[in-house]
Each structure stands twice: as C-alpha cells, then as structure tokens.
Image (tube, rainbow, N blue to C red; front, side, top):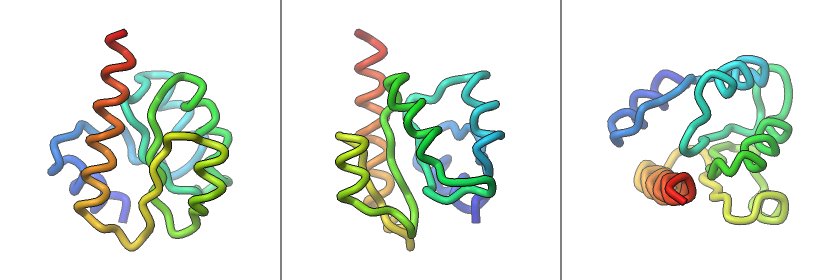
Length: 111
C-alpha cells in the first residue's frame, strides 16, 4: 500500500522521501533532508506518529494526516492548520491538500 501511495504522490508531481513505515526510519529520514510538507499516517509499525508530527510542526513543516485512525477535532486542536484526509483515499482531496500545504511550506521557507 505504501508503494501505491508513493507512486500516486509522484504522479501528482512531488518528490517522495520515504515511505517510512516506522518512527525510527522517519526520524532518520528527517535528519537527512527535512520535507517541504509531511504526509502522515497516525499508526506506524513502532507507535503513533504524534511525536514525529510534533517535531515536524516545531520545524515549521506543514502537515497532512492521511489515516483511517485520524480524529479531525483532535488534529485541529493539536496541529492548527493541518489537514486531515481519511482513508480510503479521495485522490482529488489528497492532491489538493498536499499542493496547498507544499505551497505554504515553500512560502514559509522563502521568508
């Protein structure tokens, strides 16, 4: 499933770092090259994604949560401005969310 998601996101025109099936692998990838936007599933192999999401938020990386386990109210309270896309994927909504947040991240980096 992660490979299918990667291919779809690449078809949207994005360069994909990952996929990272665990917090450990995501932290390692984050150290090498911080992303312009992060697409996060809530449940990873070694725990919930929230500690990683906290770190990304603190780094100013825009967040899109894509999960069957996402609670919109909890996410909006904890991560204002984050977008929630629920599984099963609505391709158009996911593409729009990623583009919106990627543009936001690029504007923030520019200054």
